[in-house]
Image 1 (cartoon, rainbow, N blue to C red):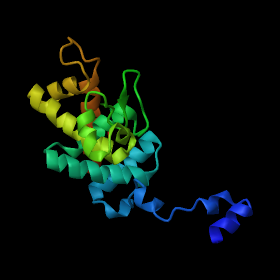
Image 2 (image 1 turned 180 degrees about the vertical axis):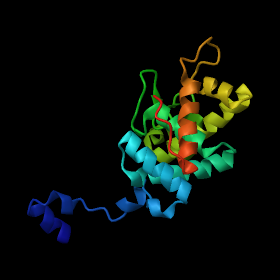
Image 3 (image 1 turned 60 degrees about the vertical axis):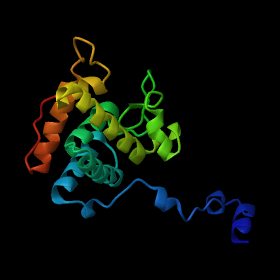
Image 4 (image 1 turned 120 degrees about the vertical axis):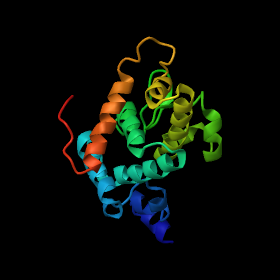
Length: 187
């Protein structure tokens, strides 16, 4: 009855209340992170002009997924920074989607466990799938640098357009922040 009264009175927000919405939110309290993780979250929030709570959740997820895949979590975050600037709805002209710009049509089988290709726009799912793709690229390339070339789709090209260097630079910035040092001010 309460919802019917709200709708009748024109209160469309109250009529659309979803008590479970908070369970779907990609956010975390930065105070729940370790000191280095919190520093990284604060840094990324300022640098990419995104709220610290969602970035905090992504930092936590990067740590967990990175540890499972044996990939440095700062590398995962650096890939996200370079690929999407932390925009979970980013889409490239060639069809790469989400935070880590995963090519969903190429990796559609990886999204099946998460409900299909639309899950590419769920930040946590995209991160998890992206970490798996990154791990496979590093294994195929034999090193992180060569793996980044595969990740960018430039493995067979003479030049990756500076992609690996940009990701590596971003990772070094994040490592400095995690260690309590000031990141360099280089472009």
